[in-house]
Image (cartoon, rainbow, N blue to C red; front, side, top):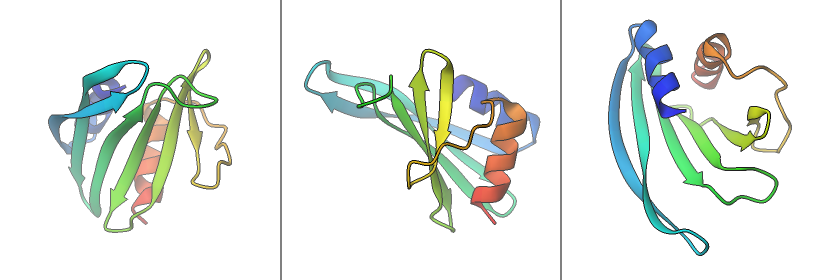
Amino acid sequence: MANEISQWAGAQGWRVERSSKTIEEDALGTYQVPTLHIIRPGGELVLNPVALHVIGSDGRVDLEAFPTLARVKLCGGGGGWRIMTDSNVPLRQPWDAKTFVQLADDLLS
């Protein structure tokens, strides 16, 4: 996911900074995951991995916006990534470059 978001953001001319963070889970132990900090007109986005073992999903990554503090949860599954609001309402959009750019706009407005 981090690689495709980095490509999609770069295609928009947005600056992307990569780093990593450590996650610790009982079943998996401690592991490193990539994070992204995306700087674009109107604000910044952070791709923040949460965990691989999540109830109802095969992984969760948050997409957070600053300065608005808006967020969506990206939940993995057999059919790909699902976009969920903080109130757990699915956004029923395909996870692709067009949806990512629209989410970035919406999260920062």
